[in-house]
Image 1 (spheres, rainbow, N blue to C red):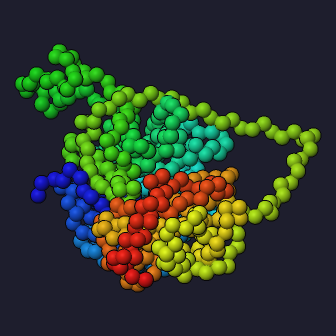
Image 2: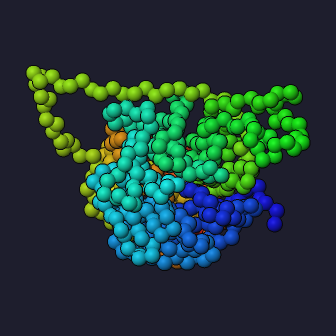
Image 3: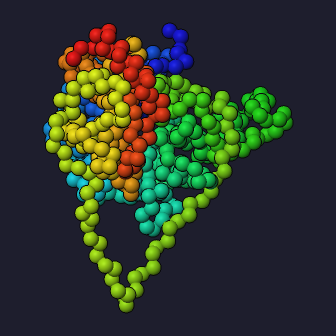
Length: 540
């Protein structure tokens, strides 16, 4: 089979792992794992899951250990998974294999080491601090995990009672959010085994095989440098960033000595003249030195990657979103064929220790809690009780009607109430009537849940969520993979999707995720509502 230029995925890819024999790619999607042929990018099988953000690592003889809300065991050659262990929720959000018989899991509750042969944990620690966000195994049989701080933590199975610290040399003595280590990786190749660390401000570090920090680089500039994925070999560390930016940092210059060295076993034999390397002038004895850092802008958006090493050939496998991030794609690039440009390096500006408090100064007044209401306590009908006639039966009404609902809780069980803009609070979620058209062509009634947060909320506001009217059962449903499976709908028949709102209320308080301007189309909404009532392809 000829290799594919690009493989279409049914959802946005979250991560890409390489199998131990380098013959397969294990692509993590929400609620699914895809097993892909590494050479042709052909899909071999899909493993359905019940977890929105699974984590996977390959074990002995193609065994897959899948983390998430719980620990599951699967196989590269099967589409079924079985539950492993009990009471592991919060400890296996992210998993890695320290040894063939020892698995390390980290999560919101803490960390654990799982003995595969015994089927039981040999170390379990409940963490009072921030939740772990990544974990990777070192070459010497230890686990390194990050909790979103400037320090990565090292678990030694021989001494699990205390964790060692791993951080970049240029780290402030006080906590700085921009210095948080948010991405971990490991190098591949003949001299692989280095642990890679990437911080939120763009700094990159790598260790030797014994986990001693061997080098670090900091790109110059003040743009967004948040890493999305990191990989490497014995020569380069590759870092994928937002907006399709790929950077690489040099670990070591290549050895210019190529054969015929003093003390060689072939001493005295006839030697062939050394051929010039690409970019090297005839007569030069050494190639030009490689730059310390380079970057390139990819022609497609990518959010995850892995590096395939086959003898002297290197290729990057990239995964990214398409169709408004409802679908995904997978493709490969030759890193040596990309048009790299030199990247300027800089230094971190470290935050100093604050001065000691003045013993004669008056203590600051105690901070009093705020009792200002930020959201309503609603007690109206549930979202599941909203009538379709309230969507399609009021076409052409003046004004924009909407409901208030809660921003958290079981989606269909959240209460609703009619309120005006003046009576809306920053933390209220807005429920807007909508119409959608699937890729298959059917127009359906929909609801858009638009959450809000207070203005000083630390972080991005939650993204809006669509509910559509299903066929079997006839009820409101989220456009997520498990619900689509229940309806026997393929994601490729649903997405890309057209959305039309009857209107968007202006002057809402709070901070909200911006809506696509194309969605605010009352004429399109009215046309699809009339079509839905006339054709009767959707029953309610």
